[in-house]
Image (tube, rainbow, N blue to C red; front, side, top):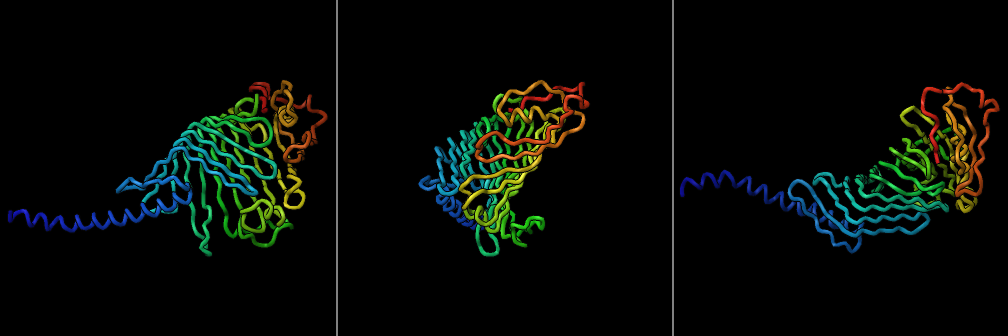
Length: 330
């Protein structure tokens, strides 16, 4: 018995440390449960995962935000994880996922059998929550972008963030010298196809600019907001097209929709033209040098897109006859 006391005394600091950590961990878990009650009202989620992580599982998730911009999330099952020392970062794993967003007469939606996501929220100098990063990866995605036919993708990635205290573009006279905020959405898709189109790889970088925080469509539209987009489509042979465009709202509060104006650089001009017009493309070999076309259209679509600058000598231009023909894009 006397020999046991030195062992117990040696273990006492460890036992006390574990007890203190258990209480601290329970406090972290209670904080996450409070957050989940705010994010998912009525879920009654309980947090486990002691001692290395904070973890909760939800079933039958259905959330909707109504307003100028409407957002909705549905998930058959959702698992959330946090590191005990990283309260700003939450990792999600979901099954039976449905996402949708609607604004300015455009409605986009996507469904996927499974998805992973990470959400990082930080506080700015004023103590307001800001979106540092939201990344979503969806497997075997299906949906619509709000314009054009439905799409499918083997893998679809969405990465969004708020960029704080960004400098304005000096070439844009619509905006003040400094902006409190702008937003960025980066999209990547493998095996992406529109309608009856062939699968390609798609990459898009969308930068939303405005004279205030991007928390309302009408406010953004009334305060000189704009969206710059760079969208690239490619396949195993190389780049097929690159769209560089600016989108601006029309009418008070953006009530008249949006206007897109920009250029398309492409080695498959007839395929691009057919996709924009919703017609079957003609057989076309890829050009050796891309052509640059001007594009202007209204969103939501109010008629055929205005694509101009098609070369008159297109039929006689050098082609890459040793590589696959241009794919159908829509």
